[in-house]
Image 1 (cartoon, rainbow, N blue to C red):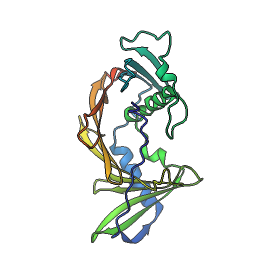
Image 2: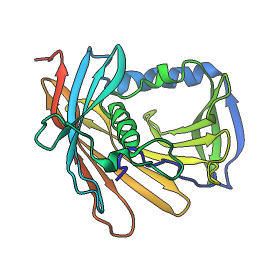
Image 3: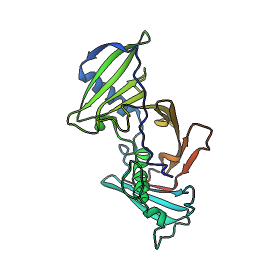
Image 4: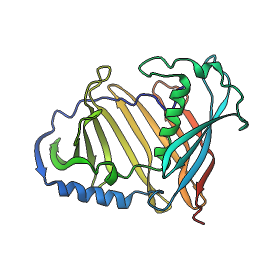
Amino acid sequence: MRRFLTIVLFFACLSASACGQESRPGDDADRILDALDAKLYSPLRSGLKELEYDYAVTPEGVFSTKLRIGVRWSADSRPTVRWSDIERRSLKDMPEWLKAPAGGPTSGSVKDVFEAGARATTRWFVPDSPKSKYAAWRKRLETRMVNARPERVLVFEPATPGPLKRIETAVDAKGLPWRITYFPSKPVEGVETVVEEPVFEEIDGKWVKTSWKETSGVSSIQHVLTYQLVRGWLLPSAHERLAPGGKAPDRTVFDAVTPKPPLN
């Protein structure tokens, strides 16, 4: 039910064979970030100002009311969320199940959870710039020997205390991230690290993230993004989440995707 706000805390130990860290100057890390920024497709950098889309919400179990969540993103403001019925008609009253407490580690109502998840989807349409994301972080490049092979790792540490104490990003020969490890400042429900393994592909001459695996101990979830060209912009058309255990994929199709201004 909380397809967009499932807690992404997936854990694994760092390789026991990692050793012999060799620190390099921070400007080496900056050069890799500059090259990554230039390589990855950024609608924002290309001039996207506004974006709207919606998707159907099909609650599980006894929650049978099908609704739509509409998302509006602007370069100048926080994403906004609107609710409608499945035919995009305005709701007179919110269903009772949306007003219920979310429960678990999440505070607020079920509606709050869905709306926070909806806002989070904008990061798939307009990804954060790596360079700007880590502008205020201390950064360095390390070379580590893992299984007798050198591995380049960007290490980021916040200048001020926050929810994360460190992020380590292993980069491949092309300078693309292939493993990102997050270290929370405090363990959350016993979790001490979060591991993401992204995959980037070139589509229509643009490099975008098409999938990523989130791993927590022995369990993992695979995410897949598909893309479409809309008014000249390359934007997500659907998101699919593949859970272990043979469960049916959780697929969300983004409808009425409207970027402004059009490129063509």
